[in-house]
Image (cartoon, rainbow, N blue to C red):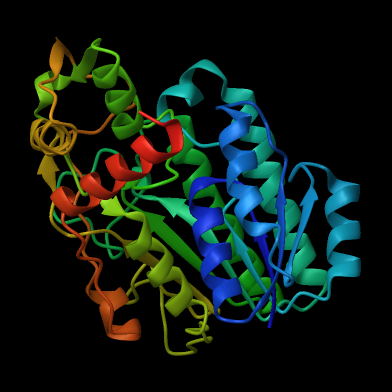
Length: 335
């Protein structure tokens, strides 16, 4: 089939595009190649995709209404995997307007493209951050997500609401993907594992928030890509028997669905650092700090609904995943 993958030069988009191409699908990848983090890393990812005869790259901003409309009118896409967004919880506190452009206007442009060109299935990136002030563990898609604690999380919640509206009004099958702390080779430099590795190799201190007592459901990138590739064939259908009073928020009378994609095995930040120390053979110099605004204390994913429809549960251990990242990091940066 022919896919549009947004954020194709990004961490998750690159891995998903690679998987689709290896399965024989045609992929058009778009990315605006912004400088939120090192553009050279994005270009290096693209260098691995561009030689593939079934891959086409277009540099385009999601917020460009005319450009996006033209992309869809010429694209003849059968499915869309929308992974492009302005990422980062802490950056959203400093630069909120970037999230309005990329995550709200950009998502609306995707929905409009799907509406006007009869896309068979839209899968889009949401986030575990939508759970916000929730304290019940593990996080379930049956839970309320009405209390986000960062603008980034609020835009992801908004994406789910916008998608439901289009599923209801226009019958577009949409699937929201709530990712839980994704890490691994080709990861983002603004994320903890990358920052810790760079600092430790340089002999510098690492900033450890909440004294390392936060717990995260760290999820390895290959498990994320596997779940997405399986879910793209699980197309939501309208359920006329569904009601607000008795139905799950993750489902609807419209062809709409939301899934958690997480490892279901949260570990403390200190344990994560210990795995990195072992993989690098370097003891970390820790600068213990308090909790940061916008952070949550713990995340843990209930992935039973994902397993029920795909037969897959992410399960790569932190020790294995961190070791693979370190191996990639040493090779890519020649450390």
